[in-house]
Length: 402
Figure 1: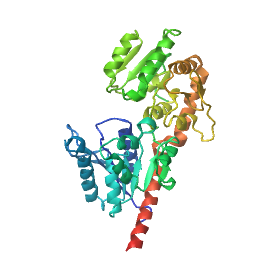
Figure 2: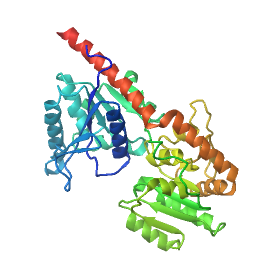
Figure 3: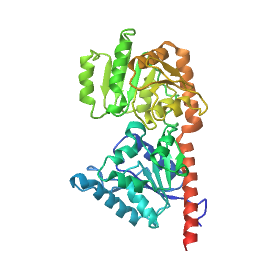
Figure 4: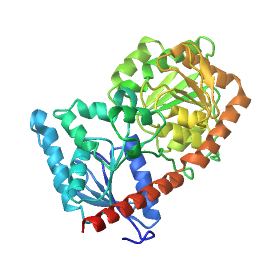
């Protein structure tokens, strides 16, 4: 049996990785860097990128762009799975754990390699609700079969409370489910930046996707403008909704109030300048933006989807009320509203803008919550424990069979 203290060899698998920048990619990169800092070996197996080499190293993380999908129409998924199986089979004796980010086609390949003598397989769920990983996988060609294989993983990671009952309902065994949240580097995102928040400055940061609730946010800003002519909204992100958003901003006459940018040099400074960070999503996993804003001690107004309760309520014993169409709830570390309720969103934002002591209290509480439970260090601690638990179980299995 391997020494419980020896460095671990971890293979992380995801369909796309740096220089692609999204929530799942950022979480993978943060965790990989923290594990390497502790002396472990981490390799990321991913698909090719047109502007990057097949082999490279970034911040100590070995990146191998060897996953392939052939242009075979509806059968492209099968070619991707076969490629994933071949790559994982070659690496089965080189790593202690396969850590897959997202319940995707490669999860079926990894589970098959596991049954043929490969290392333990962990699958981290990225999205819940309407865009849950398993719903997306099931809609693919042969998805129901691939999902059955994917469910044979050793552990599945629920990043928030909402995911656990969803996973049980989907058919995962209770002993498979482990809750480990996303994490944030609270040394990078911190409240002591020498920049003051600007009054009435609202910030949305993230992908410009349909499930981000951006049209609801524009409606909320229109409501706010009637009462606060100084309100300004800064939207920072890129995605398929850019053109429709620009058209909607013009249609509502918000051109002088809403600024739309695709890139900023210093993300932490944008949080520092914001009076309120707003996340109006209709579906989420656990938002990186919310974690980063909280680490910067900014007050957050968010819809009750995905991990918002875990982060802003931050207490499993806290009783959260049922919210009506026009109501909101002041939780421990932020304000929660129902999704797709622009009037409630506007009221919650205005509450923070009008109440400086409340804004300060929510920001300070948010920072404490991050330090207590959501720093990347505490998240890495939990993964390290899980990795060692699974490698020990695997060693006992091999000893019994031999």
